[in-house]
Length: 53
Image (cartoon, rainbow, N blue to C red; front, side, top):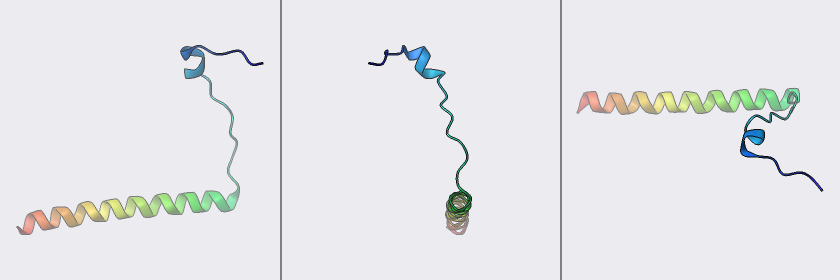
């Protein structure tokens, strides 16, 4: 049976997860870029609408 850890012990516990497989890495970067691009575009459109009002 495992020993329970205090909050401080859990706070500074950084388990090693290793690298993602190449295909998954490319997909993660592409999705992140698409989300960022969309949020920047949405912000621009909101700003443009406010300037034209």
